[in-house]
Amino acid sequence: MVPMTAAGWSIVYGLMLGVGLWSLVSAMPRMTRPRLIHRVAPYLGDVSESARSFAQRRQANPLSVFGSILGPGVDRIRDLVGPLIGSTATIELRLRQSGSTDTVNAFRSRLLVWTIAGTAAGVVVSIALSQARAVPIAVHLVVVVLAGAAGFVACDQRLKIAARRRMSRMSAELPVVLEFLTLSLSAGESILDSFRRIAVASRGELAGELGRVVAAVNSGSTLADSLQQLARGIRLPEFTRCVDQVVGALERGTPLVDVLRAQAQDAREEAKRELLEVAGKKEVAMMFPLVHEL
Picture 1 (spheres, rainbow, N blue to C red):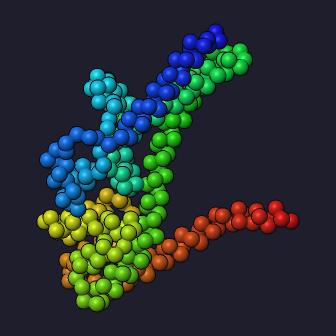
Picture 2 (tube, rainbow, N blue to C red; picture 1 turned 30 degrees about the vertical axis):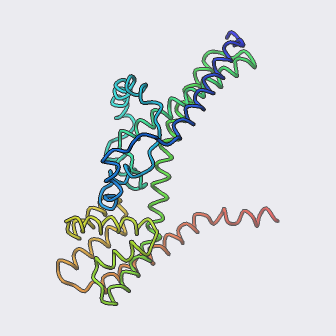
């Protein structure tokens, strides 16, 4: 390949400087007058996900003009590669489990951006290799393709890891939440008031989800439907079993204290069993420091 001249490197450095300045501009808050929807959104944040997103601090978007020009083409590419990325139901489940407010199209757009960024990084690496030594064209193609694939996998794995970690936190919080519910019900509170107390007193992931259940009930939904919708949304097996037991107890009129106490005990046993399984898998790794010392 022909070595890059000073003019070529000037173009590369200019692009890097432009992207940096562009990022700084996008981080600046908007100075325009807020619309009515942004004024009303803070008062509806407890019952609407869209209102919460509108209530967040807005940022300037330097891509508005380019987005209007390139938007149809990007949407077309996203629709074409969408089935290759994954089904809509799977992506929706991961986004819901991770607690993200992004839509499926937003995630696919981000995945496309990460892939393009990885490909661009591969091009830069390929140019650097060509400056160091003569490399066959096939090697340059492999570097670019692998870099693009790395960007794709990194974005997808980022969402998977976020969903897995959040589900682990919710699983660890479940026994404590159930015990708190049992204590509140034993003190004479209703199940809805117990949920409301947990949502106010706790800052965990599961407490936040129960706070959304309380908001849905206050907006007109039934408690059973809200709990079942939450269970279908996050698909945490132990929480789903607990919801089935609670809904059944509400329908039959069974005392909830005994049901929740049994569910809390089962959740504790499940957490202990998982801990023993992890310890068994890590047994060899736990012995490594001892072998190293010997």
